[in-house]
Amino acid sequence: MSSPSKRREMDLMKLMMSDYKVEMINDGMQEFYVEFNGPKESPYQGGVWKIRVELPDAYPYKSPSIGFVNKIYHPNVDEMSGSVCLDVINQTWSPMFDLVNVFEVFLPQLLLYPNPSDPLNGEAAALMMRDRTTYEQRVKEYCEKYAKPEDAGQATEEKSSDEELSEDEYASSDEAVAGQPDP
Image 1 (cartoon, rainbow, N blue to C red):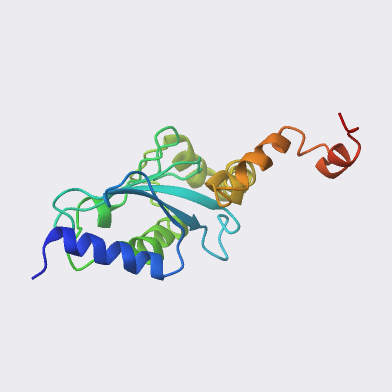
Image 2 (spheres, one colour):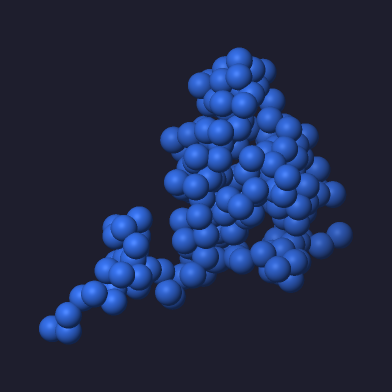
């Protein structure tokens, strides 16, 4: 059986080889961000989130800590902290699971099948149970407002120049850039 550090390395490499954008937080392999796209045919489709992953020293025997960095409207995600309430990750984790499972199975399932009876966001849970259409509209509004590719830091090098335009973005940024005189 391999050591936890070898397994951590192997799982991280497997995640990177699966075409996920992974950004290391520091020199170690215990904290990193992963870009996650909302599942197709769901109100989250088109949304892009930056997910913070922290691997405990005892990984894979202990579950990773998963949290959304940019906002998401979901009964099982705390709106302020981004913490995820997901049984598979929090209680029933097994060393048989790996990081690819988290991003290809667990998180998509969470978004496709929210559990309003075990909420971290009570408002989202109540709205989902009371008025599913309005709930799905609110999800889409959050996707448009907080989960655009640039919100997840998709273009890390280009982001700084994009940020300069973001304030004027809604007022036709092409005209604003073209219409500015040279200094």
